[in-house]
Image (cartoon, rainbow, N blue to C red; front, side):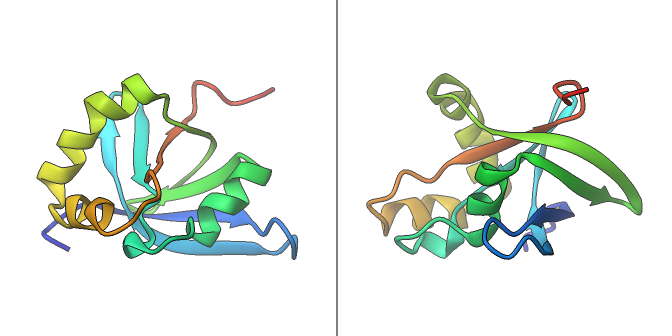
Length: 116
């Protein structure tokens, strides 16, 4: 996908309770990983996004290293700053937003915000 970096995100199913792993493009923003819950521009959020809304304690694997992180939806001002960087990385995101009425959320994954 346009030579963009990929991580593996593992969430817990909000209904099933089962662990689910999906490959996703990401942008590194200081210590955070930034994900786009685009779902290809369809009207519904992707299942992984619904899962992390129910349980934000997730795992990521990047370059063979697994980390536990906490997920949160980006605030509007964060999205305003990050969206152009994400579209520059993968222009398809702009098309996805154009074909849906849904405001595509961005997700920040952070080790520094982990709950103890």
